[in-house]
Image (cartoon, rainbow, N blue to C red; front, side, top):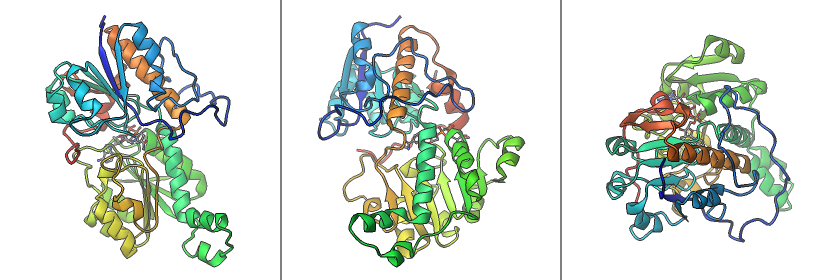
Length: 395
Ligand code: NAD
């Protein structure tokens, strides 16, 4: 049993007007299990109301009472970057770090070196590339994430972005909102998705959910994946499998990215790959910003090689005000929000609590939550990631 632990938790800021006093809906829909049969998080208890804001500093993932009751010290901050940040100052004392991909506390090799007590890094969400996984392996740090907690929400966001871009929704909404009725201006870049070739780079939990959701749109579906899907799934969805990302990119009108960020996928979408796509293709990236070369994307939109780019992942995060993706033409970017709907927050908060309960009680953490354990990739990490580091370039 572990006691007196220092839990350092980095979360995004509260809303600028303070925490909501009410919410648009009174409850969240019931979801009994994930699509592959994996059970939802199973903490012994929760001290929060699902459907309320939990992912920001005051929400504290609903962990405060549980941790303080159990005699642990809980520090929550959004101040994460630079040598004077609360995160950097508290790290030397931390036994456990909790962070989110939306507002990542980058655990670089240098920071890991400064945290002699650190034994567990939890991603409240999915995608642990903000941790130098190579350094974590070398320092015996366990890294885990709340696998599946927000995968379906991200798939929904990706589908929304595909439709949004191909139909060119945003300018049409702007005309309506601003009192206009300029039909020709509204539709001069608007297409139907029907009949297009739509592909996913990776068909894990999110990629497969996107393919399933796109099937009713009468499109041709393609994918490229390290672990090929079973033949029944390929037949049911009418999927074309591609051995390489390049073959997939050439075939598609719309390419949606769903692989983890790791050394083999860092800057995979570069000039060569995007140059090989059909003129006027669309890219959706809800995986990680660094899988794409940022200047290449901006240039390809300006030249018309890409007709649109949508996504909610950037590098670094938060993105600087002058990041080219904020202003490039025909972008449909959001800040990193797809995985942190109120439903997603309830699940990753409960999953974080489950992981902590196991950790304190010296019980095994579910293998699907594990990325790194005992000096090597483990669980989902061993299946979906390759070893290495992708944090270079952060502060
Ligand atoms: P997952 O582990 O179920 O799927 C990842 C898949 O990628 C695996 O099936 C793996 O085999 C495949 N893969 C790995 N390398 C590949 C390669 N080079 N080419 C093709 N396929 C490859 O994870 P998931 O739940 O589907 O999440 C995928 C990624 O999405 C995460 O790693 C994370 O970076 C990102 N994500 C983003 C958000 C968000 O809020 N925007 C939320 C959750 C996850």
